[in-house]
Image (cartoon, rainbow, N blue to C red; front, top):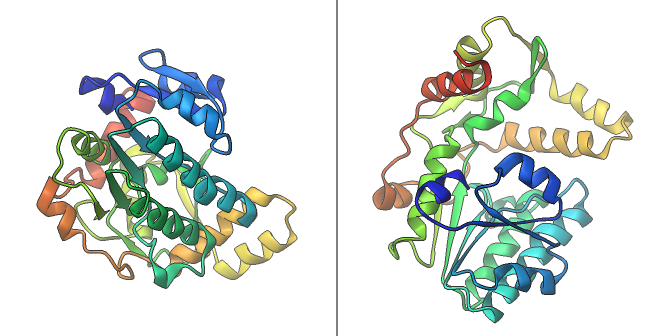
Length: 277
């Protein structure tokens, strides 16, 4: 959202939790209250807008994934058609393809993509790999937790680079009706990415490894649905990294250039924002 504001767009944020949204995005944008299950609230939020960017987070249960990311997306597309939206840009995920539909978090994204392609809207589907911003989420206090072997490889992408692509999608038609995998500059083992991030951002933090089998048992014994969903995600990504995707990031590179913020550059920016140094 910050990038869109900087690029001169008037932005309206649609959220089920306006208090949380205001705390996150500040007062430089408008706000609209509603729910993706309520098409009328979607239409009210879209009136007067030219473009829509969709970023939905489903889960933790399969029912919630379907309600939010699949059915909610269809409601958004319908409201966008009815209100005359000129273009819709949607975030998906690099592994959202038929080979990965066995996993609910990817299955609903595949269904949403199919619905968008037949909606009649002008669209762009962006399918980023892991964001650099996922690494700080592994840190709690003086310990960072790595679930699994850490041998999965991802081209970690800075959100700022991704945001620049989103903004450009609204000012040019070169990506219209395309589905684009978006990578960061280099392939990095998850364990190495966490180590390199910590070395700059949290040099005193130690890494604790949890084997997949132990994480699975903890999820089985836990009554916390969010924990179960998180473990399922980590189990999936330990086996399905950037070597197992159907799309070719070269297509996005040809249009926008390869995102070039390195992991070290991101870590230094993160340290400056969080620690002021």
